[in-house]
Every structure is written in structure tokens, then in C-alpha cells.
Amino acid sequence: MPNSLTKKMCKAPKGFTLFELLVVLLLMGLALGLIVPKLRLWRPSATSLAEEVKGLLESARLQAINRGEDLLVLIDPEERLIFSGLLRQDEEGRWQVEKIFKEVSLPEELEVKQRGLFRIGRWYGLYFSGQGISSGGEIELVLERKRYLIRISAEQFLVTLEEES
Image (cartoon, rainbow, N blue to C red):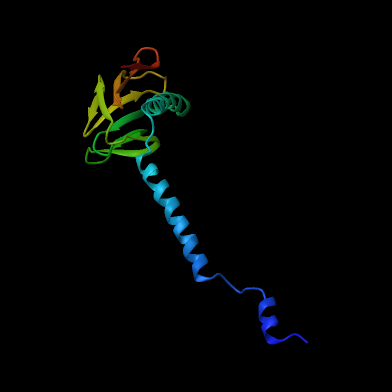
């Protein structure tokens, strides 16, 4: 007949010991300590950001043609955004963004310059008509010692991206 000591030894444990929990917490803390600083430093590369802005411009033209409506691409220097959307004037004559189709967030360290874009309030913009015609202009992006020039042709719709060092 088994005694009470052997019964206790044969029973399955009912949980984790304090030591096991502390080891797991220590390992998780070490892993997070190595991963979080690298995630904080992550940002999109200059090339991918320039390609994303170029894609926004190309899709804005196609959307204007498909919808048969005039569409704008606006640069908002205060909010650090480039976005495409419909812009309407309200009853008091103020410009309001009615609908945003696509937007690209701009990192703080990115320098954005424009040439040939028109100004609406605090925004700089490009116009795309439902027939595919644009107002034209240039957007220059400078990041990580790289300079990207995006040219938008007014007559025939072409968006070109040039990398300059």
C-alpha cells in the first residue's frame, strides 16, 4: 500500500513555480529590450517614399478619369501629408476636403520642395481633370542625403521620378 509521500510525488504539478515565471519574464524583457529600439528607428527608405508619392500621383490621374471628376493632390506641410481627394468650397467660401482617396505620411526629417504647384490656403496642390489633364509641376523630396525629383507634365500626363545625388 503506497504511503502519502509517494502519492504526493506522483501527482501532476498544478501550475508554474515562481522561479519559472520570473525566468520567462526576464527572457521577455531581454527580447523586448533588443527589439523595441530597432523598431523605433525604422522608417521608410527615401526610394520607397519617392515611389509611393509617384504612385499616388499616377493613381490620382486614373481616378479622376474613371470618376469623370476633377481631383486634387495636395501637400499639407503642417500635417506632413500628401493626399489625393475632392476639394469643395463651403457656403462661406472656405475650402474643405470632401473625401480623401489616398495619403502618404511624410517623416519629419524629409524636406519637401515644390515648383509650379498652386496654393490653396495652407496647401500646395496639383489639379487633375476628368479628361486626364493636369496642372503640372515638380515635387522635390530630400531624405538620407538623397534627392528625388518628381515631375508632373501638364500637357501629356507623365510622372517621372529622377534620383539625384
